[in-house]
Every structure is written in structure tokens, then in C-alpha cells.
Picture 1: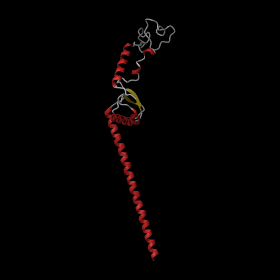
Picture 2: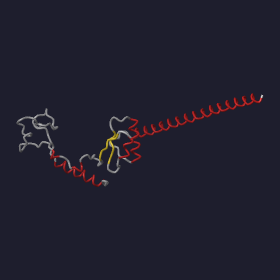
Picture 3: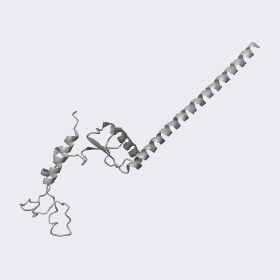
Picture 4: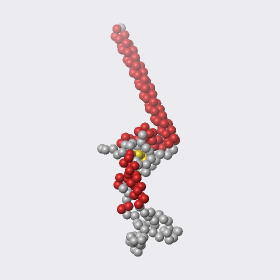
Length: 188
């Protein structure tokens, strides 16, 4: 697969900007007549509406012809393609040169912190990054707690292994004593 160079993305953004400059500002029909109508676009539905009929001299209405250039569709204003991420494992597939991640809104603080920490390691741009210092410190503290849990589990396993060895040793000693008693009784 051929990799897209950052220059191509910058060109796509410039193309999109040129197309946007040619596009008219789509105003709500009759919004210039009355203050109660906002200027935000609303599709005209009336039978005699001149904008719906596309009468010459009336403002243009949105249509597919005003779509942005194909190469720029889906690009974030930063020039990266957005990829929605919900876990750390999905960061492996991301190309840091052309893609940036957006962390899903349902992801909690802990997992978000882990995702951000891993993205920094892989040098991947995070688009919805909030309070970087707080989250990175949380990520470090979470990693520490995870490491502590692992060490505690390892200590517990070692302790159990030692206890098991001691029990086996005691059981072996008991058997040896019993064998010694039996051998003494046989000799008598």
C-alpha cells in the first residue's frame, strides 16, 4: 500500500478551502425580512416557495453539487484522517503519519488515560485531548497501581509456593519418621 505524504493532505485542505470560498452562504429563505427567523438554513417546503423552485434571482439552496472535493472528505482540519478508538489494542493499526485518533465518548477515565499514554509512546495525535497533564499523571498512577497489583500477586504466589514446600517437607519428614518406627519395630 502506498503511503500518503503530508503534502498531499495539505493540498487537499487547500482545495477544500478554495471550494468553500466558492460556495454561497445558505441562508434561511425570508430570514432577511423578519427578525424572528434565524439565518440558519431550513429547507423550504411551501408550494410557491421561490427558493425551492430555484427561481433566478433568489438564493441558492444546498445540493450535492456543492459537496467538498473527494480527496478532502473526512479530513480533520489538522490534515489527519480521524479514527475512532475505544481501547488500547486498536492503536496498533493506526498510521501516525496520516491518521489521528479520537477517543470514544463512552471510554472512562482510566482507559482514556491508558490510551493517551500509549498514543504518546507511538507518537499518535489525539484530537479530543483534554487536560493533558491531569490525564497523563492519572495514566502514570494507573500504570503504577497495575504494576503494584502484579507485584502483590507475584508475592502471594511466591508465599503460597513457600508454604506448599514447607507442607511437603513436613509431610515427607512424617513419612520418614513413620518408616523409621516401622523399621525399628521389625528389628525387635
